Structures are given as C-alpha cells and as structure tokens.
Length: 88
Image (cartoon, rainbow, N blue to C red; front, side):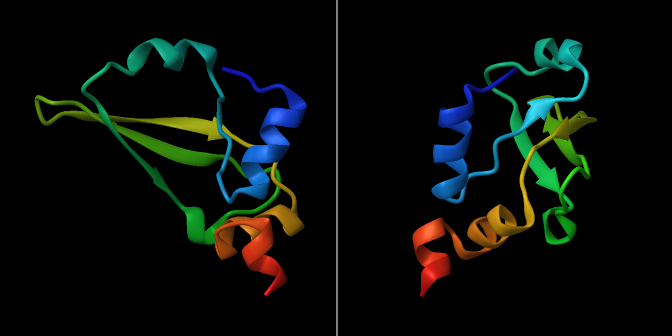
C-alpha cells in the first residue's frame, strides 16, 4: 500500500522494484494462492505505471495498474540487479 521512504530506497538499491497500487481497492483482489506477473518492465520509465496481472488458482486472471517512483538512475540499478552491480 505504501513504503517508508528509506525502506523504498533500500529496496531500489537492491534492484527491487517497489510498487504501490494505483487503486487502493485492488489490494483486496490479491489472495494467498494467487500468482502475480508484472508486464512492461522492458519499457520501464519514470512516472509510467506498470501492469500487474493476478493469476487465480481457478485459471482466471485480472490486470491492475501499479505505480512506482523509480528514477532513471534507479532503473539502471534495477536492470543491473542492484546499485552495486551497476557500478561494475
């Protein structure tokens, strides 16, 4: 739902994309046995939302929108796997 600023920064430095729900009501749509796919990561850009597909155990799926606050530099960290990897 949200992140403390320092926690979000630490995730980004480790190459983890911190996402929040564009619509807070979507939080209730995810259940314990669901599988989640994030699409469009190859075109990840600052301020551009990503699509998250929730795959239900019964074979159905639904797509929601998620937001991030990643910068161009942090995208490089994400693509490299971490900030440390981006230095090499």
